[in-house]
Image 1: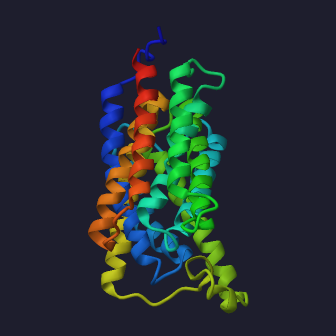
Image 2: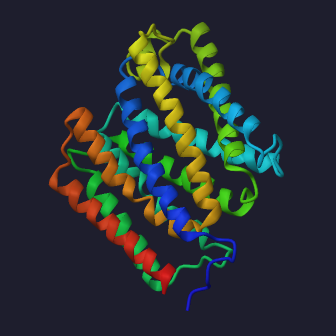
Image 3: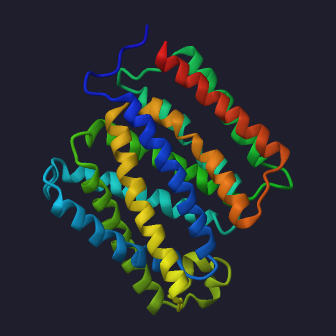
Length: 306
C-alpha cells in the first residue's frame, strides 16, 4: 500500500490546475514558435516581462491573502533560475523542429520528476513505476530516432529542458510549498526580465551579425515589430502569468509524480496547436512514441493510487 497523500493535499484541484495550465502553455509555446521568425528570444523576454511583471505586482497588491516577501529567497531564486534555463533551452529548439517533436522530447519531464521525487521522500516508485519510466524513455527514443536521418541535434535541447523543469518542480514541492504562487511567478518574470535585458545589451554592443545568421532567435539584436506582433507578445505574457501561477499551485497541493503524470496532456495540446497554426502533422513514429509515453504515465499514475 502506497502512503496516502498529505492531509493538506488537494489532488483534484492539482489535476484541474495542471490540465488548464498545459493547455494554455501549449498555446504560449506555439506563439513563441511563430514569433521566433520575427524577434529575438531576449527581446521577447523583455517585452513580455514589461507586460507580465506589472500585472503580477498589481495582482499581489490587491490580494488580501498575499504580501510581498518570501520565506526562502534562496530557493525561490534557485527555482526561477532553473525555469529560466529550461525556457531558454526549449525555446531555442522551437524554430528548428516541429512543435509536436519538441513536445515529446520535453515530456521526458514527468519521467524525470517521478525519479527525482522518489529520492529521499515518501513519493517512492514501485516496480510498476520504474517499468513505466523505462517504457516512456523508449517512446522518446522512438520519436527522436537518434542516428536516423530524421534526427536533429536540436531535439536534445527539449530533453535538457525537461531535466531542468523537473528539478524546478521538485524544488517547488520540497522547498517552496509555503510560498504564494503569485510570488513564485513574479520571481520567474524578474529572472526573464534580467536575462533578457542583460543579453540584449550584450548583443547590442557585440559583433554577432555573422553568428545571428545561424541562430537568429538566440543571437540577433532587437527587431522592429508592429502592433499585431506586440499584441501577440502581450498575449503570450499574460498566458505565462496564468500558466506559471497554476503550475506552481498544482505542485504545491498534490504529489509531484502524480501531477507530473497529468502534465502529459501537453502532448495532445501541442499537436492540436501545431496542426492548427503551422499545419504540422506528426508522423506514425511520433504518434507511436507519444502513445508509449502516455502509457508510461498511466503506469506511474497507478502506482500513486494503489
